[in-house]
Image (tube, rainbow, N blue to C red):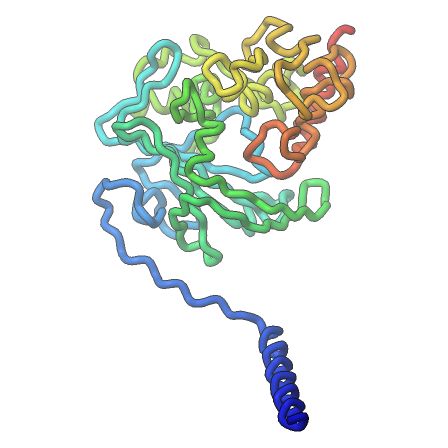
Length: 362
């Protein structure tokens, strides 16, 4: 009996040893079944980004087809230092119209935003890696968001409504190596920021953001003038007759203009009367003139832990005692603002808003 027991124990030990050795082997991922070919039949969304036919040649070059127009806001929403290229697809024979100071897009319009990182930010156009492409499609039901994640080969991107996460490494402009766990939002999270009166809506594609010059082909010109010349924009009366923002990164511009441009593109999609943060009483559009609505000596409505040890959103002359800079300078859940869209601190943005607050008369 004892011998048999010892034998059994020995066999179990050998099996466990073999099992442990096998468990240390690298597990090879199962090959993914290739996607079936798709027809570009207009029944959106497609499973593959390539099916839309937005780009010519190698997809990773992001060279738009002749029917696609580039666009670029004067100031960019911060997304973990990702660089972006943006395009708009307007249905043939249709026009974007300006009504009551805003764009009215025809059904079938598609906004295309590509997020990518160069290996070295000092050489931004070299060794680029595209992480995702987000589409906003204007259907008969309104705007709908669809995230596409690019493959490692950079040959195509696939629809992933559940989002995802990717580790990204790059060298910052200051020469330091950065590692970021880049978060790709799921389809439902898009409405958290793209929210106007509880309806999904674009953020950067507004007159105030696009009424400026950019390089189009070999020419620098106002992009809305270009749209009008192409016959796809109606109601644009020239750059001087519509609002425009500066580039907050342009240090030749006035500090207050830069700060308000930053707050507008990064914060006002929530902090406005039609946004999800309307109950905060903090309204951060570029043309806001009321100091209280900007947060000057204003106590927060319900910031909770987000206020830290501070009492006011903005204390003139004292950025380090202001809630707004405290929240911008954090990545902690419940404190960080904006709540979504970043896992890192925008150091340059914090520095800009600190300088602006410190310049205010006490």
